[in-house]
Length: 290
Figure 1: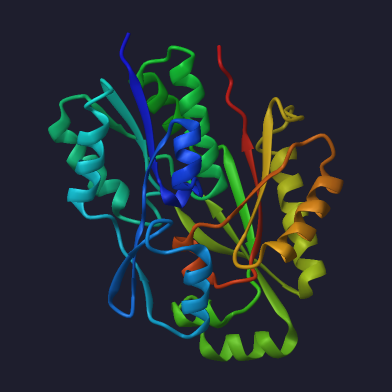
Figure 2 (figure 1 turned 90 degrees about the vertical axis):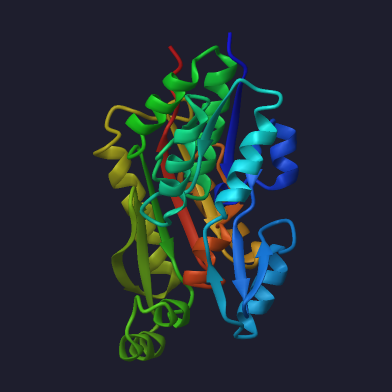
């Protein structure tokens, strides 16, 4: 039986230390801060990132270099026969497309999954892949399952400030100024390919209600007939300060009793577009191992 490795990038929220614990390989995402290159969780911590963002530094995301990707794969293939590689959504970065092109030179040893997820939903796909490999599924079967089920998840995010959406051109300066005065909180949605506007509400209370209602709607429609932690995963995410996010986690645990809700910081690739203080909730269909 082939020895299969599971690899991902740091957009999954899996840190280098957690990767070692879980037996998962994690490629760090690169960032340019004032034109200097940093690697997430290696030469750039969450705290340093937000400090630089707060200082108004010019923060840019970029994709890993082809050499960094193939170096990781070559190292893994010294001990494994095949790799299932799960990068961030192809709709949010061209790194998935690049990895697919690079995999063509590996003659069936590297399976790149266009899973179209990020953060805690990408993390769940990685854990599902690991469970499937341990259950004896082939790399092809794992790849096919993850691509077939890629839309079986939903993320809703509320940003705390419109400043970063304005900076990235996702919100006009006039709308940002008006939004700040009126306390407008945009609720964003990631479903598959891209980050879209979902709703605009006034204040955090209404924003949280909007996200919870949206998750319930997904559970009732897309996932009708499924319930409980054996069939659905509910997870939380945030940017910046964890203390404020703990309140959000408690609210979700009270709203969805019986679900063990995992919470991670949102990946820095998302954070640089939305800024600190954002909160998110996700629902994903659980793995069915037959």
